[in-house]
Image (cartoon, rainbow, N blue to C red; front, side, top):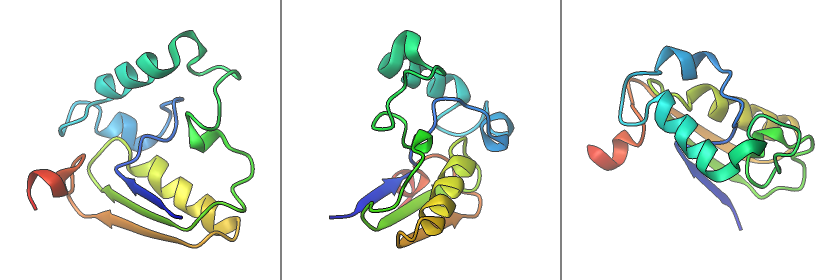
Length: 113
């Protein structure tokens, strides 16, 4: 078992630098991100009622999770939350491999293999 996270949407709170920095660029804008979270969580979004299974960045304890492969572009809204999640996995003793692709936009590797 493993986590395969490709440009992962991990945190409904939308408070990272990259979510603001790349809000209008790439194939997935901040508005697209907000629409996705609203569709999944509705009125619970940004509240304490959000499950860690819906927004993994909210989990307090990541120990015991399977190894993770985290793949994200440097020029996309999810960059900072992906890096933060990988860092938290390492801190919890979980094996994680993080790739931040210079200049990569959201799911660029599928659009331009």
